[in-house]
Structures are given as structure tokens and as C-alpha cells.
Length: 66
Ligand SMILES: [Zn+2]
View 1 (cartoon, rainbow, N blue to C red):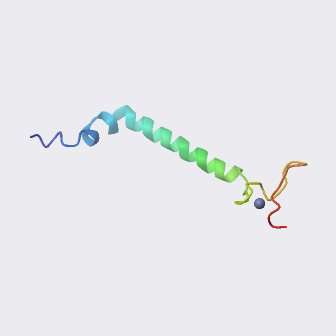
View 2 (cartoon, rainbow, N blue to C red):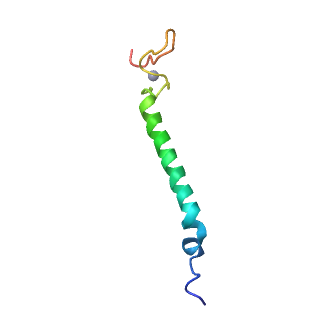
View 3 (cartoon, protein in one colour):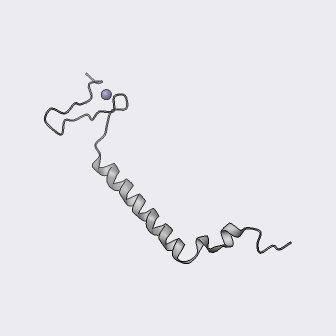
């Protein structure tokens, strides 16, 4: 029984070279997108899903607090 090949996933090519770089790049891009999205999107009501403040004329807003 060979000990070196006990964990082929950790010792394999998955966490080395180009794949690791690609993985980090993808992860960074995803995190940046999430942060931007969180800042851009206004807070919305948890019950009706509508925003609290009207951004566009005639836009439906939350009426739960009235
Ligand atoms: Zn609401």
C-alpha cells in the first residue's frame, strides 16, 4: 500500500499551477461582484420584497409599515 497516493485530490494537479491561478481569479471576481451588488442594491422589505424608497416615478414601494 502506498502512502503517497492516499489522497490523490490534495496531491494531484488540481491545486497546482494554472488551475490554482484560475481558481483564485474566479473567486476574486465572484467576491467583487457580490460586494458591488450589495452596495448598489437598495434595502428591500422582507415581506413583500419591494423597496422602501421610490427611485423611479410610479414605482411600487413597500406598504407594510403604513
Ligand atoms: Zn413590505
